[in-house]
Length: 261
Image 1 (cartoon, rainbow, N blue to C red):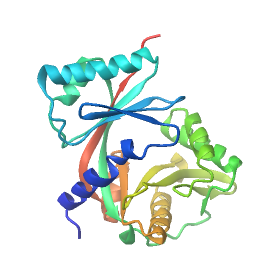
Image 2: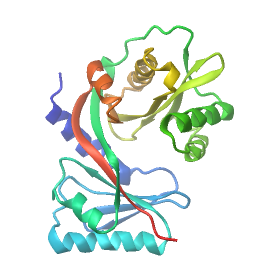
Image 3: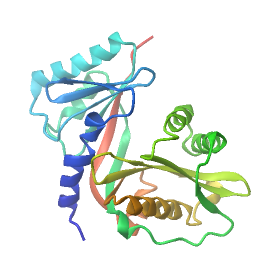
């Protein structure tokens, strides 16, 4: 078994910096000291940096204010993503003091793709990849029901990525209804793929669908020669993932700035 420390090191050196070294299409990346601003024309921005920013106190406050003011001038929201093992440890408090709002903490888990491929027997549920625009709209509608917030952005994202081999949407379907939705996104130039979504309608939980979606995507990863699978998990998903063999390596919290109208 690969140690948590080794998995964290691989994550910090490969998957994490890909947020700004290999961002989604249409992005512009600007560096300000130790942090990187990623902007897109029609979606909120992203800010991230290395595990140790090397800036603290009033210098850190000034760095935060510059990012906030940059996006305010664009009339655009932004997420500053933090991780639990980062330094300085008071970055979250300083972000909140500057007006950024926490979007909740998730647990980051990493597992070996080869350990996650065991098939799951399902009764009346078919796991398959999304084939067309109709599937994508059904997937997003299910995600909206499960997570309680609109997922129109997901339709745009997946339609843009229909011909991109690094993004694969996978659904669980029963009697023509999408009962669970998910996707896998391979991180170019790394050994990582991220597992996203995995939301199942209330009436279909506890039937092994979540595990089956993990296994299907793990087999896609193995076929691509991808070594690691990464998940930012809720507290509902974390215990399932740990039972499957994923290892908790850290936590992550996004802090959002939304300009006032």
